[in-house]
Length: 90
Image 1 (cartoon, rainbow, N blue to C red):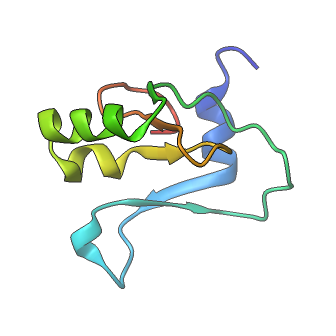
Image 2: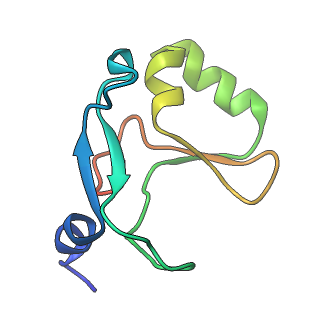
């Protein structure tokens, strides 16, 4: 799948501005049903191991920027912050 992330993302999703909340900016919507466990690509960013790390990032960059690109992991305390990274899923 290396080098094909853009094609995979384009196949499964589209980016548009929702009619019901333009203040949020653009959002990603599925074009079709995505089967469970389908890998769309890597979500690269900073792994925050605890709330202190996340609070520090919010203090430095602002809550709107950090929270817009925050992806929670299966752990109740860990999250990936892609606010400073460019990747196909952020």
